[in-house]
Image 1 (cartoon, rainbow, N blue to C red):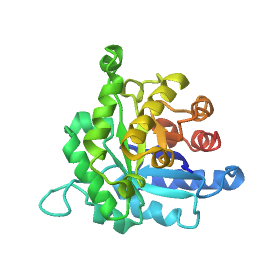
Image 2: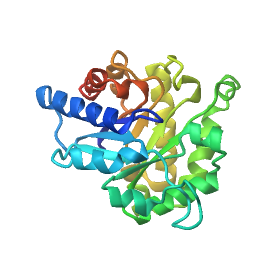
Image 3: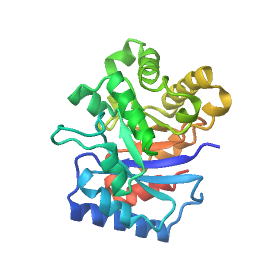
Image 4: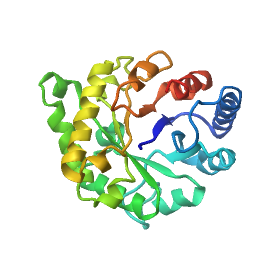
Length: 257
């Protein structure tokens, strides 16, 4: 059975001390108000800046339900790539997840399907778990091409994988028009796209595997709308931006399942 996941993407926010305090406050809040689900059923993930990875991994070590993600990796193993971070560097910090293909990486850094496929492969080769992001711009949705675009993104970067590799991937659907805008896809819109993604997986890998893959929704998820989104049958949790930087809000989101 697929896992429920509440993942926070901190993006380029928090100093080292700010990150330490935020993690402490969330962990303390979860001690006071623990999720109904156990580790293995529900996972909490902090997608923190690179400077915070080692500290964060140490801080959550005693809680089997909480894990750490890097927000990106480079598509080469090592070499003269000043300023980049490799999967081996990420692995050495104790992190377990890597966010790959976020719309901001695609748009601002021109990351294409081949590059993202390479990142997925490297991540899996180090036994890290990719959180693969996909989603459409507003003009694409308005033109009615959103299903085709998400299909192309998934096929272009994931469908070279065999079944054993694919079952380790988490997918996050993030409509770009809803990221950081305060506009959220309706629960029906989210469910419609998540069901579409799962059908793609069924057609490629079979129903059993597709039913085991967690598909997250990202796009202005907050403490007020999380419960309604997470009630949708194919929405297995959220990749949360701004609300994950507020301890009380993120705890509420975690307890929205």
